[in-house]
Image (cartoon, rainbow, N blue to C red; front, side, top):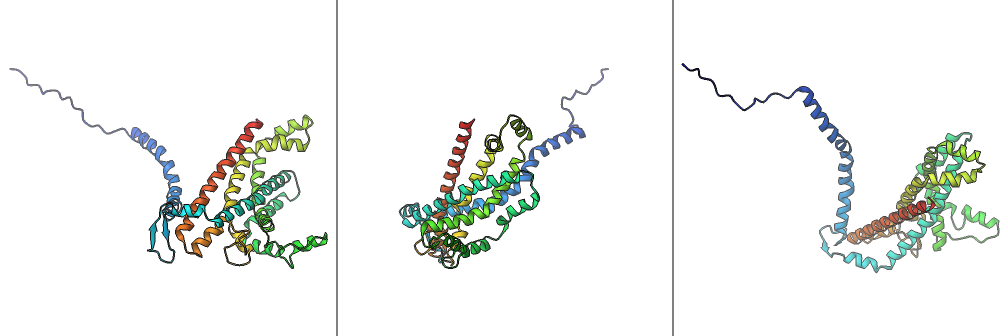
Length: 323
């Protein structure tokens, strides 16, 4: 009598995974996905309030869109850009923007670097001085521009009064191109110099003191230490402030608008200080040419990107040459 043996099975039963292995797997998944989950709110908000308006503006710039009649928009392709390149008012506004940017940005960064160098030394009431340097930046831009408009007044302005003390004739700061650019540049520089100075100061305090002590032992003066140690160590910060100042300077709008003393976006009687942002505002909300104003906005964006890249390449090349 033979015993019947059950055929051996080759399939293994699904055994539950050990708890430690499951925990390890979830920890790996959490480690990979958590960083993206933490930063996702920024990209969601940027996509809704940044990327979508940007792309929609690009679409509007390719149409003949009447702001008063939302349904009346015709596809014109690059017609708005072709008209823009032949518009003398746009080139005038672009020239004014570049002029104001140059007269405000270069002195502003140099003054900020000097102020930061002074604040980096041991001074009495250093905290109060640093707060005072930042106050112009937190002051209302409307209030600042109105005050400076009165200071640069033709008849009763304090600036013309000081000029008269040295025997010079009063200047109509709003009438001439260069005088208006200079006055607006002073407003911009006064407001943003302290902000950039604190950025430079934070970078200066990160420079090791051993470098200055070694330079002092070698007999280097403070001026030599500043140019040979401080400035080279601040190259990344200088690049950052230059790019940020370029982006802000090319978008300037409130100062020239309020400097005119009215709500007209023409920038003076002869458009002598109308910027590209003011020209865009005029076309969009005064002429109601929404498509043309969108083309101006995208052209300004392209100009800002080009200037930012050029500034970065120039400052980087200067740094490499000095190395």
